Length: 167
Image (cartoon, rainbow, N blue to C red; front, top):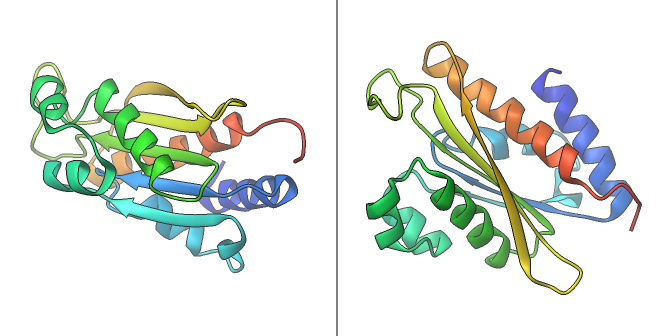
């Protein structure tokens, strides 16, 4: 599905449930938030977005432990989950998405080649605890292709994680 159609579907689903989202973006540099806010009326369901490109921003804005980044690397499941959880707790949103990856053309390694992206989603459980899940993707193509594929995956992931019943 094209990003604009995903955003429209997400908007409809969020409005129907009275829910709001927050984004925490590294490798996409705000493209997810930009795509969401391109749609008129997005203030009904888009709460805020964090662009945390540097490791320092991840720590300062989202509360990601700097030792976690140092030990696991910024492009890792624990950091993606921490970004999503931090975005959720630092906002009034109900659902968060976080992305961190290697968009290229440089910066890749044997363990984390260009196109490696970790995505994470976080939400509050019935008892108020923050829950999350994560997904590793290896996207093909140039920088633009990797970033666009990440946006689509992030939006689809938000849709997939919405509660099935209306609020």
